Length: 172
View 1 (cartoon, helix red, strand yellow):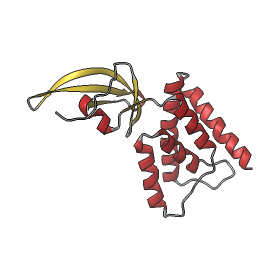
View 2 (cartoon, helix red, strand yellow):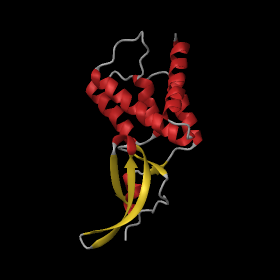
View 3 (cartoon, rainbow, N blue to C red):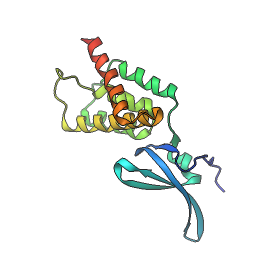
């Protein structure tokens, strides 16, 4: 028996899976695999039309977590307001770091990516890969803000956008 802590999630709970963002547990099922009975969380990622099965005893190791607390959400919003930190490293290395932050499932790290890659209309054009990473991070952030507030994605997107716009205005 492994010592990994069993997470207490129930069907209909919203959870965050690092590589995919916010999903909803639709059921907990038993499945026989190689003669062993496995208990699995069945997680639906509606936006991506994807279903993921995670063994309940491996959920902690996989990084599955509950939605962020309102405190973490406001910390993420504060992070968005901060000054963009762009390292002088080569783009390939920075892109790799951004991707790791997005896939870490850590909301503050995701907010850092959004902050660092956000461009106002008068700033230089983003490259295709910058835009892809920015949009991926923005979507993860927005979905989690929406799930926590229960207000819906459009309202969450507005909230995030207002913070980014106010930051740009303050910098001008």
